[in-house]
Length: 113
Image (cartoon, rainbow, N blue to C red; front, side, top):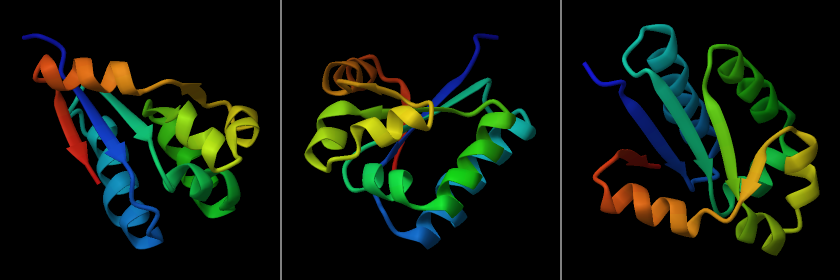
């Protein structure tokens, strides 16, 4: 069986959505073996939420501990003035437009929240 990868495009900066969908599903996916890899792509207003909210940062550490990967859109981070903050949190901050397009064109598994 081929390894399974899931990408979660996280664009919603609502705290309840973050807690009860993004983190809940990503963490459980890794802990219960639903997916071999889970990558959360931080896009749009979520970049500012991650940079400024300690509770979100703590949840990210829990998720990282079980193997969830995180990366952020550099254009969004720059426009929101949080690029250096995200880098200080150890995030890959990259231009996500081309890789996201490739994921979509290749039919990869993607959830958009």
